[in-house]
Amino acid sequence: MTDPVDARLPRPADPAHLDELRAATDRAAATAEPLSSPHAGAPEELLARTEQAIESASADLLALSHDLHAHPEEGYEEHRSARAVADLLARSGIEAEVGVFGLETALRASVGSGGPTVAVLAEYDALPGIGHGCGHNVICASAVGAFLGLATVLADGGVEGTVLLLGTPAEEGGGGKELMARAGAFDGVDAVVMLHPFSYDAAVQPFLGRRQLRVTYTGIAAHASAQPFMGRNALDAVVAGYNGVAMLRQHVPDTDRVHGVITDGGQRPNVVPETAEALYYVRSATPETLADLSRRMEAVMAGAAAMTGCGYELHWDELPAYLPIRANLELAARWTRHQARRGRTALPPGVTPASLAGSTDLGNVSVRVPSIHPMIAIAGPETSMHTTGFAAAAASPAGDRAVLDGAVGLALTALDALVDPAVLAAARAEFEAAGGVLELADLLG
Image 1 (cartoon, rainbow, N blue to C red):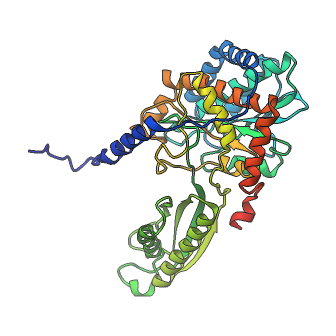
Image 2 (image 1 turned 30 degrees about the vertical axis):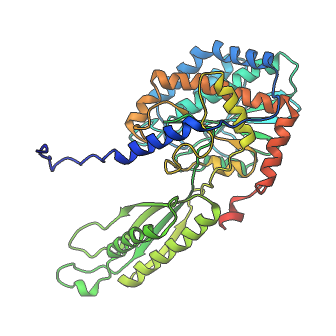
Image 3 (image 1 turned 90 degrees about the horizontal axis):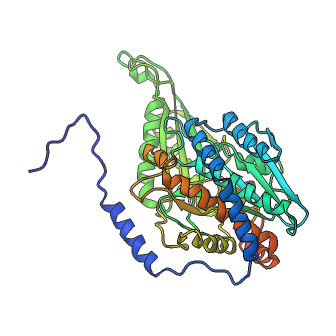
């Protein structure tokens, strides 16, 4: 006999599908060949010195991670977070600029000179109500650690090159990296490295392109009981559009995602709503399929207007759209090698479930500069990003380990690109073969 269900509480999802995904990943990981590179990279002596410099800064890095975690700030409001990074750098004798590229909470610091330029990216925005449920405190602290490790080696001499630390605001929907790119943040940069916490260690994980669509319907107000026939119900149009999206989902590729919320549904039940509004996130795996899905969404919204006799307006990408990540396998192979020295196995493409995919504005950078966005495990597969459980993991011992392991991986990958011309040449050749530099407007209009 089953336990009685309390109808007042939500019924938890059955974990069967997640269990199967985990089992399939374990089977694939058992036989997967890690990414590899034929190039020598930086000499071991330089790698070891950089790793030691990061370990020496571990107390400061973990303190930074926990400080950000305890004081979460949403996108474009990360004033305290950016200042915490600048203060830590100042204690190491490095000046950081805050409020660069036209964004109050963007940050830039630079060490070295001449040679190739590698940028290490730090995110530090949090989610409303959840805090660091995406682990951006780990992202930030690991980036700062990589930068400090590289700064130590560059200060010792013998390595020609430039390393930038770029603090990039508002990844959670605000598109800070796209705005920074338009302002020239990545001009002259040869490679970009950053990481993201996850439930697996993965050298490459798919990330979908994402657009935002706000649809506003305009109807005619009327008394909902006395003269409903004189009204045109804008809320009905929103509901029809929402249901249209539900029907659309059956006929899109498996990698496509559409999800929305009703942001305005009227004020009182006895007044036919004159205006109503919904906001959708529209995601797909390639720029081409994202553009196609966008056109289909427009048709659904227009149909809802026609059904209900309402007018409508579509507002695309009031904040920048996100492109799918174009991962650079040469740089990802360097990351894989350096995670192995930290006792981690970074899984190659095609092992972790492609369905566990979100979106990030790093995609917009990855079509401008050879880039990587590897994933580093801080929790098990049962703990999803954007949850309070994942937020707890971001300040756990596993999160702390990821800060240091990630900082080493980023720093040593960057050092390979700075020191071994063959690594950077291979990364550039791969980037050009994939289409070279692309602009957001050219892909989505």
